[in-house]
Structure formats: structure tokens, C-alpha cells
Image (tube, rainbow, N blue to C red; front, side, top):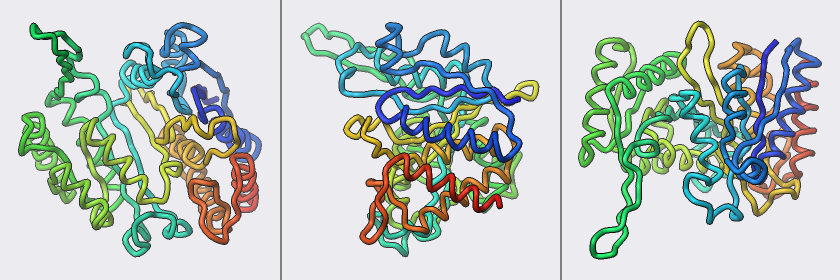
Length: 366
């Protein structure tokens, strides 16, 4: 019996999590997948009900779970809250407390969507890259993080970028190990030309590669150049490994290559300890408050995040591939939510897109 925690969160989070639960239920009924689901509050809705975006009870439930399926957090109604109470702190605490140091963000362009990208079809057709982002270090968590008043009355804000050898080495190993299952190429992105953390990053990645992964091709690229290369020639990359800040930026850029940020899933993984590995799966889109509650949200990123959950947390590789194939077929049949709508296609909402994916699953499963 697998224990799964769902944290719907804010905005369109509850809608895409509901869609994902429908797919989860299908697997329970049709694929001999035994699970127990628990729900918990996080983000703005948690703040409204408990006074905190990161309730301790949510963190404890997440610790006990085999996997967390996360919706989205945030919204304009919470913009004026103090920094420590903002909805996003709920997600950051989950990442930190569960030690989810490895964030996997695949950017896969389905053939049916090659014309939906803002880039030329020949640039993105067949795109399949994986961004491995360090998730619990760097500027998002470095100390000091503060705003102070200077003697002349000006405000001074400080965020600290900090990395240790161990933090860099463990994320590098994840990238190299995943590359062995793909095209055996890793590009390491940093800013070693202007940042001392970038210098250390390049040194450590180079050392791990030489000692442990000589069979993998390693290249180094400055993060700003990597951003440019992603829109110039993205298919030159297989696996990109990078730090927390650059990974956040580069993965969102990669999302647009695929047609919409509403298409991309992600997995955040911890270290394996006594056979157990903390894991959180989330679509990389935000809470999209402008369309929340309207039934317009694209559920595909959340559903594909569940496919990653099947693969990485439960070892059900065939079931993961089945779900990915079902999504591919639905797109090939012309189903589109508003964010990926193209001329001549069938525009549908969240529920109808989920219906189509479930029907595709049933056909594929025979």
C-alpha cells in the first residue's frame, strides 16, 4: 500500500490535483495499484485557516508519505503579507524540511505541439531535455537574508548565494546517473566568470565527473549563454545540471519551448535512506489566479507529474510510460486547453481534457 499526500494549495491547484486524483483512481481500479490518499493544507489557503502557509501538521504528513502530489500556491490576495508568511514559503519549507535537493524538470515537446511553441517547429520538434536543478541550497536559502536600514536612511536588501562541496557533488551525481539512462551528455551551467560559487561549482562537477562518471560527456556553459542556447539550438542538450536560481530560470524558459508552461511536470527527490526516498511532484506552472475556478486549467503538467511519481517513487516504469502515451495520443487527436490552443483543434477545459486522457488510458490498456 502506497501512502500519497496531496496538497492542492491555491488558484488552479485544486483543479489540477482533482484531475490527477481521477487518473490515480483509474490506476487503482485498472492497474493493481494499491494506495491510500491523505490531503493537507499548504500555501495561501493554509494561511487563511491556520495562520501559517506551512503548517507543522502538513510537514509531518509529508514526512510519513511515500510521495507528495503538490498543486500550486500563491495569489494576489496574499501579496502584502510579510515575506515569512507568503504562500510560497509553504513549498520552500517542504523542499527544505524533506531535504528534496534534486529537482528534475523534463522539457519534452510532443510532436502534436511543435507548432504551439513560439520557436520554429524545426527547432523544437523532437525536443527531449532534462534540467536537474539543485533545490535546497543557493540564494533561496543562504544566510543572511535580510533587509536593513542604512545610516543615511536607505534600505539595503541581502540574499546570500552559498554552496558547499557536498551539495554540489550530490546534485552532480544525480545528473550523471540520469544521463546514463539517456544520451550520456551533461552540460553544467553556472557563472564561474563572476561568481565564486560558480568557480566552486565547476571545480566540483569536474572532479565528480573525472572520478566517477568518465563514460559521460561533460561540458560547461555559463548560465546566461545556456539561456541563449536554449532558444537558439535547444536540442544540443541532453541533461543540464545547475544551481537553484539558474535552474528556476532555465527550466521556465525550457517550458516555453514545449508550447506552454502548463505542459511541464517536475519531481523533487531526496536521498535514499534505508530504502525510503522523500519525493514531491508538482507541475511547474503557478497558481494562475486569473483562470482559477473557471475550469480552464491545463491538467497535463500535474498528470505528467504523477507519471514521474509512478516512475521514480514506485518503480512502475510501464505504468508511467502508459500515462505519457495516453497524453501524447490525446494531443495527437487535437484536444487542446486554452494555453496550447491551435487553429482547427478541439478546445476543451480541465474536465474534458482529463476525460480524454482517461479514455485514452482505457484504450491503450485494452
